[in-house]
Length: 297
View (spheres, rainbow, N blue to C red):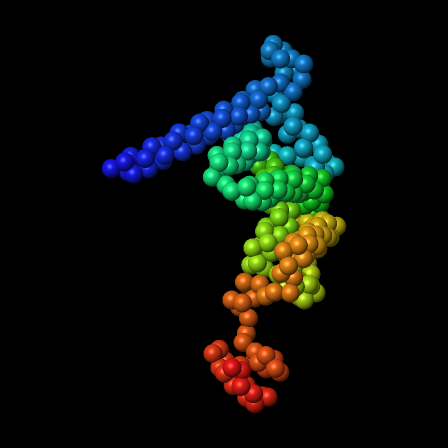
């Protein structure tokens, strides 16, 4: 059974290669986590005095000083909250540092099995997704997160509550906003991918632009119900720019591939049958139009 033997040898060869590359990813993650937890953020490297502050502590204090409203304070709901936050934040940053390494190792793992044209297509896509996520995360950190935090203050004033923010809720809001913003900014890359494979057409967006903009406005308010109007405006404008960027790049691919006037796969699945002469709606598989009285054969 040489075929079976060759199959298992090839299979275990791939498994061995995959494990080897995942070991690299795991090593980077462990080192990143260790750096976030242990490495000092000041000049006292050996923690011999009370001035020692780990890097993660310095980052968390910086975030608090940047986003915490004037006069507001953080408090812990339980004794374990500070430790939980410290470990949780270090884990988030370590994952963020490790993700590019994971993407690179995954790409190198599948690279030998790709054809040249597939290799040329996948690398720009991975690069675009990475860059868009980073830009979105930066946008979320500097524009969306501050407005989200500020959006809670009027409710505190309305009920005459002291401006004390639970420490876990405060940082969770910031981390969640940054991640969601990064994911939203990846929309153009996936839209262009759908256009490239003929699943979606840019005309689907351009013909329904006003309804899509109305939906984006509602989505901006639903995504950020506690944000200030300024924050909702930031998110709405960002979503509009992303959609327009998707359409712009998608049209370039359509003209390049020569399918600008073809029907997309999605529209074929969900389109309503119409008469090719008068465009009257007819039943599926019907060969006669009752409106213009013509045969469709």
